[in-house]
Image: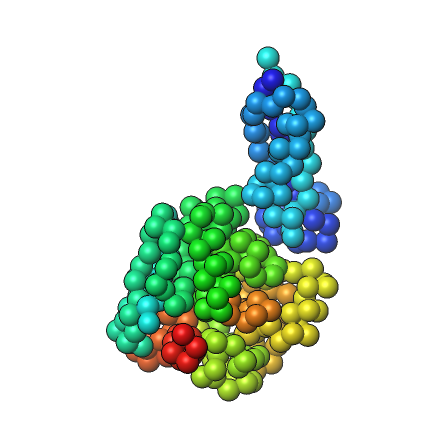
Length: 83
Length: 232
């Protein structure tokens, strides 16, 4: 089966998000008063796997090994079947 | 004695390090393209600065997972010294041979200027030629240099005296104003627990000749060479 995993990577709670803070400030200069801006990264990974459990397990491994840095990031995986 | 200087796609401080080692310190050094993988015959490694793989994913993330890094770990396991400068420091943390992570500067801007550093320990293969507490000068040039580690790991770094340099003001005081990137506890460089792997954000190779404004960085390379001479 073919699956598409959408991986969302964000800073752990308590970590600063300078890009978000800068965007918030710039929005303020445009007249938009917002409470907060947070940035996150999104990866779409398409892979073949025998089942959704195996696909999710593989993508989780990929996140641990490369896609995220567990010291500073949290990540969520959203899996959907293709075809 | 021969020192390897690693080259990845996007490394750009390799030739500066080569110049310092060969022409200023006067030891044998060679650049090694990452595909070579084998580091047999080398007594030390420098992972130089630059923008390996365009900082894709995270600074240093891709280079840290290339096979040559296994050879670097093997060489380090023999007690030989490994020095990571700037992007090299990022690569060593991403490879998990050094604690923590280097994240985007608190004010997210590329900072390129001189910094004052305080020598926190001389008990490393890279700082034997300094005095503890000495204030030295080296430049930084980075956007992802904010040192971060979880509280427990930060405490361990302090306890084991693994912090090598901290950003300080001219008088040697640790202040927020002297901290160029928001690094926790003003940390500019650390060693691993066995002390033979050293990563730092400032560039010692850019402060190795008086004509450049400082030759304080030279002692990092001289200390490393002394250590190799004495031990290998």
